[in-house]
Length: 220
Image 1: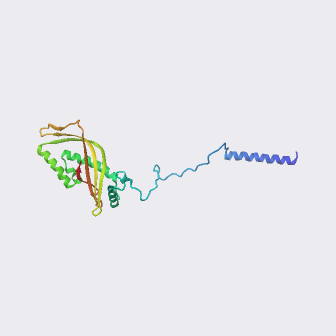
Image 2: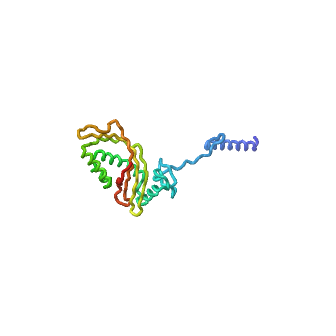
Image 3: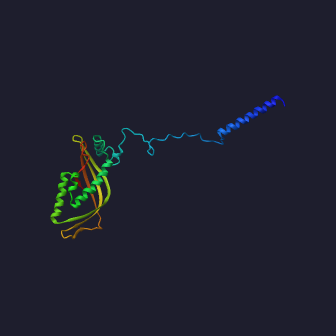
């Protein structure tokens, strides 16, 4: 066999060998394949999406409850400036609990337990009603059902004294039975649901060490 032919056969064998090796390493591609996409690095805070903080943007804790730029919004912002720990949503959660506690204490005529949470003026107003009931021999059996709606209706802040006031409107449901000295029902029923609307104003000095708000006024 001629030498050139032998050389061609040897080179062809080497080429086939290299092709087979490359296919074994790289695999085969058919048609169009999307380029590989790099896997993102896992976040150090799993389950928490990343948000860009926009400096100077609206405070959602405020604008979720009052109109942006309103007098109440500015007052709430001032409260936060003086006391950075103040949170409007958390305040409203506390106000919800305080409303039920204070209202039921008033209905039952047991004001001693709520003295730390009401102003002197509110205490005197509540006490006068309780005393009049006792004078007439009346007792009240009340059951609180729940709050159907509540909203922040006004906020004020005094920059000179750091005194803050926040007014909240509550719509609630309860049953109330009034009995005379003989125990007879003279008003209400266990099946009759009483619906009422109250607007309560809570106050606090924002730079004081005491974080508790006090009820300072009531109205419809």
